[in-house]
Length: 501
Image 1 (cartoon, one colour):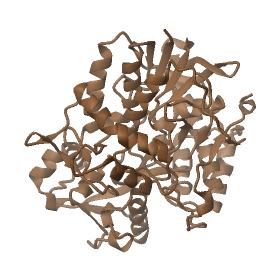
Image 2: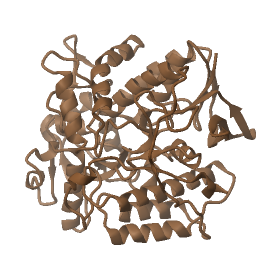
Image 3: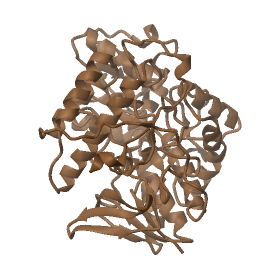
């Protein structure tokens, strides 16, 4: 029986821990409380071809189209074909999805050709999944370490054999036969983000420093609609799917000037459409008008968003509310195969920390929870396999040499938002790279470790964005506005481990 260390307690980490515990000794590590993760905040729902008027083939086609030529078709087929059964498995674990007259309620979100997004608690799908999975995991003999920050991976002759952690007891090592990184994305790279404060890319950064191959780092998805207030509470795409519209400050619907699908165009298109409308009106937010949906419907279908609006003094049933794009989901991460294996022996990655190839250049709405579920399930079955690690021909990215000046996290976030956000160009990227090269992260605290991770990830994200001289999906280059067919492939990179000396 192997000792498996799982880092992260969102849907991907909890599914892995739950299923692996039947055959392995499982250690579950999280830097906050057990229930804090991106999963908890997922509103819209989970997409799967569960209905008679839908099909796996249609879900595959929608996913490939949203991915703008960069999806791995094999991974997408796995996602969409295995997704329905995995969702049924969630139901068996106690997740109660919303129903109407006994049938699963379903919503429509951008770039889906069918109403296939199911939800729970109105707009609290992630929380419902988190609660059910935590309840299931707590019944098992799983060793849990809360408030334990992973600083780095431990290697022995090129194989991952544990993690270095920092907790109230000080620094120590947790040994492992296999490490599974389910530590989420890096939303804290940006000043405007829908992600909680824990999303500092710890797993991706640690894997990178250990020499794991990364991929698709230039593709960061910005959600079109977050409430334009401090903290940027998410306003789910499902609101627009149910009929809400976007207005400029003059009350005019502007998205049909941008795309024939209007408010339901792919996320990257809507986010840039909003950003440009904001620029045309001096940076002021655009408005989301959901008043036509009615007070009772909004309160019942979107109770969380209703509470967020009320907390900030808005009555969204009576008036449009101000919204702005915000960093939401990282398509890139640690390159894996369809069983979660990375390029390092002994290391697996699942969830947003992984780059499976299913999202390509732009994630299809509500495919993220499904990806975590499907590939964590597969990874848990592959943990005791003797198969070789993922092969890679990643290019070297020698970008982690530290500079001389300390920095504040807010400075990095503003830099990334301004120069490496929804729209990019060579001048801005070069300016960002130069500033990032000057900074260094110091200290032995958890916050200092997070800052180090954000700085390292910002450097490689900028490097990847400079390398991709085209516009594709979530990566918009103003100086290369067209898509280049010759670049219809992922860019993989690896940081030389010698850089860390």
